Image (cartoon, rainbow, N blue to C red):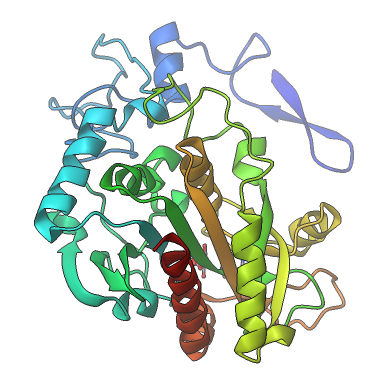
Length: 367
Ligand SMILES: O=P(O)(O)O[C@H]1O[C@H](CO)[C@@H](O)[C@H]1O
């Protein structure tokens, strides 16, 4: 039997794939492209904002797999073309007209942190389903509403529910609302998340102010900015070294002191993995060696999108669980989403106060 060799960790093993030439079974170039890009269909149903099946493998109108054997050419849709400027503009107009407000600060509520949007006064609420071309939230703890109103005198818009890569959405779609915020008039992005603490000094319930990130999805060649660049949003090659606004970090530290929670506030590095599985011990160990303090499955692509269009960014992680980085660590330390949300609930009040006070400072400074 003819086969090819794959490493199995102990050396290599012969496995068969039924081929006779050392490669996989022969495929035509069209079949090969279709196999390579099962999520990349150029049809309306998949790629455009009006499509019903974006981000998933589609079935064409004839019931066959797109680009498989019906002779149609597959044209991959780069991420940046999923939501052209005009579509973002349309969504932003819908929100500005519908709310009668031009928010200055955008908030993204992390898992279990939806109450950050509940403190908004005179809220105008937009269910995601009712916003044209908006995705829907599928994760528990992410309500799926956009709340526009005022907070500490500032006009704000908050996403009560974000979009994650593991839900099946491409990164550009996950962070599309950040561009909507920009075109609504938002200058500051407040991104929050629930995260696992890798830094052994972090305790459950602590808050880590993000001062940097390690973009693991980017290491793997994925970016919300992938594809042709629209300079109306920002430059082709945005720099990210000063992504997290230092003044806002310093102000948040002062606010933490004033709140009497300085020992629960840290400054650190966040990393986003694709999820939805939580990490293995070997992965967590590797992240720690890379200088990562907290790990989650969000935020980084939102920050990249925000910096690309020159928004000021403030972000924090609520540490909802401690991650095991040694095999000898307690075996019952397994992360689970129920615990993540339960811990977030117990810290909602502190997170809301921190956000409200910081927004007050921004508002007063610009008044
Ligand atoms: O990052 P947020 O949305 O806060 O959610 C975090 O919590 C979920 C896992 O419990 C993942 O979605 C992870 O990213």
